[in-house]
Length: 65
Image (cartoon, rainbow, N blue to C red; front, side, top):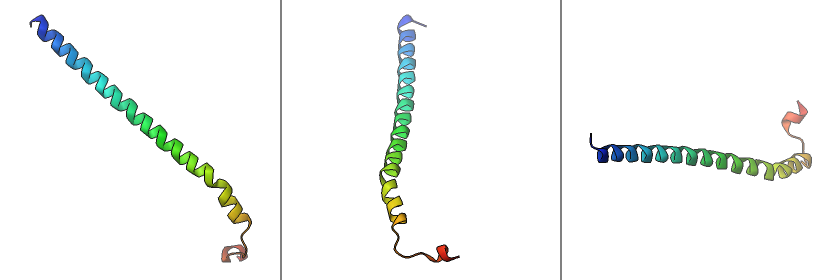
C-alpha cells in the first residue's frame, strides 16, 4: 500500500474519532444543561409552592380524613 493511501486512511480514521468524540461530548453537555435547567425550574418555584400550601384558605377533603 502506498504511503499516500496509508496517510489518507489515517487522516480519515482520526477525523472519524474526533467527530465521534465531539458528538459524545456535545450530547453530554446537552444532558447536563437539561438537568441544570430542570433543577433551576424546580428551585425557583419551591418558595411559591410552599407559600401556596401554607396559606391555603380552606382545608381539602384529604385534610378531613
